[in-house]
Length: 99
Length: 167
Image (cartoon, rainbow over all chains, first blue to last red; front, side, top):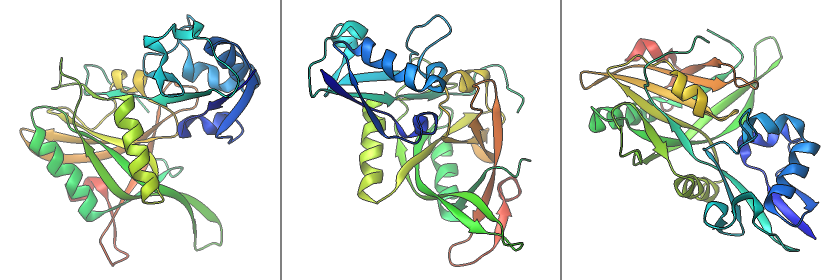
């Protein structure tokens, strides 16, 4: 079953400048697994060192946020579109980073 | 300052960011940078990659817990910003936010939550007044930032000023 994964602009440089990719997958996790296998440099931007999706990485199947479905076990069917959408956070915090 | 990245920002847009930071003080402000990447021919004939901000989309800080030292933009707001950019044939090329009573320097929290490729403009707002403005991009390995030189351009002129000199 082919699903289309939409790659967000800031990550396209790590995905051969593609804005999307298609994979045979029956769950969201499987599709993202194929994506990060094909484009290994994407992994560290999508997942923590512990292998969990980063908190500011949002994944939608069609227009449904997978947090409100079955997360990465959310089933996909032929023709579905999976969108990776950034959320943005930051702030003054307490410590500083040297360039 | 690194010469690798350049961000062109019209004087009026830089002022909009400063005024936004002052208006929300002591809370952080935030917004989207809409623009495009381009190549500029240098005097020696070489091409230099430059990013231009064409317009801004001021946003509400969605961080209700600690808005004095945190900002957040939801995925829904990001999608709305991308739609607004598309309508203008632009892209979301980055984000701005303020650091109330803190330097215009990315914090560890900024780094941990940053995306690559985007430009992150930070304006320091000291006691309610906008001061230094800087821009940064996350390194590809996520370990740090590379400064991006902001070039403030006056509308209809070719005057270029370092951002830090016009606070």
